[in-house]
Amino acid sequence: MSGIAGGTLLDHMLLRRSAEVYAAGADRRDKALWREVLAEDCVIEGPGFSIPGREANLGSIDHLAAMFRATVHRVHNQLARIDGNRASGETYCTADHLQADATILSWSIRYQDEWRREDAVWRFTRRELIVDWEEMRPVTVRGPA
Image 1 (cartoon, helix red, strand yellow):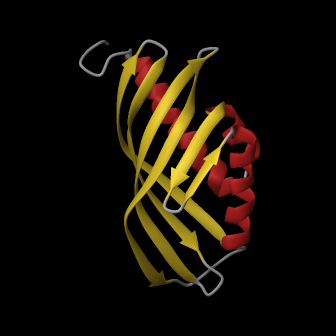
Image 2: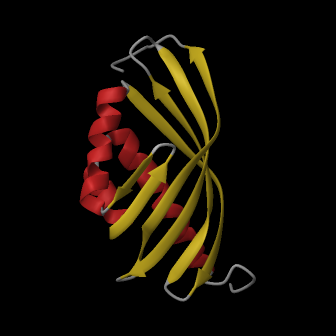
């Protein structure tokens, strides 16, 4: 399927999969998952930070583990434009962060994404995290979290 967004339907599915793998890596604290979808020269930016390079970004998983008891990232809609082996787009996400005091910090996120196809795998070269709003709410924790 070609069209205004370029690429094939498979390309668009693989771009979405990269966002889903990224989310699962964050929630599972699994650096191997992030390694699959981050280019070696990737830059991840957000409010007050900019982290260049895959290895440096893998350290963000340690920060998540230190800051929050658990996280749940949900990938929503994604719009991407593909031009050959490069793509850019926007990925919506809701990220819930369980804090030590049994409150949830929930972020409504829009990632501004750039990818490069490397060996048939779409990898992020840049992710800019934009938090549109946040919400705090108490929760009852059940289970190991």
